[in-house]
Image (cartoon, rainbow, N blue to C red):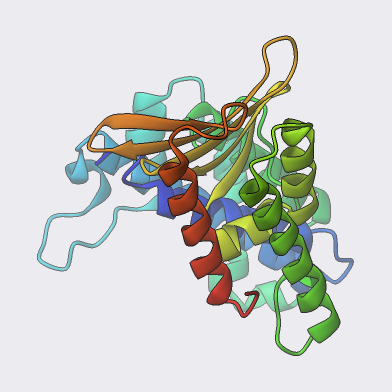
Length: 276
């Protein structure tokens, strides 16, 4: 199983850690302790995914028909430390974070004391660093705290209309085929929508791969590549059976079928959320 095959799962782990980052901002013990718990769960699942990517299910599961996963420390030491020696050592750092989670999760005494907030913050940062070390986060990619009030909700009609307007502007700008200022316009519109709603509505990742390159990606299918700096371009790349075809927004009359198919995809996915 490759990292591309696991992309949906990786995106879920990113969202989980994003939620943890938001929860840990809260001053209530009951809430920021949940952030610590989520970080621990994300780290456990990172171990399992890495094990599968290495085709080593024997390191993930105990013997038996129920395919029970191995203990947390066995997963971490037997998988992450084995394949990524640069991650923190279990006995030196991770053990203490996990022990706090165990007490919180398994012991009634947790109702009488609290995980310290700095510990929860540090554990989340530690897990985020590990995600970068194993390649689940780009070199310059950071997980932002989950923004609950940007979710599209029927009960928040004004906000839903505002998000709908943003997607319509993006659609109309792409459909215009006007090459003038198109790189700045499209990048600004994508930034304004934000990667959470782009992921939720379009089911695509918005990735700032570097300071001069951004990508709106549906892995192995589409890549809207935006490059700024001295060498600029805005290209829509379609992948089919290992081959790639491109629509260049600076040559608007070539390969228009690629752009039209992408626009149809945007429209259909927006319709699912009542935007078009």
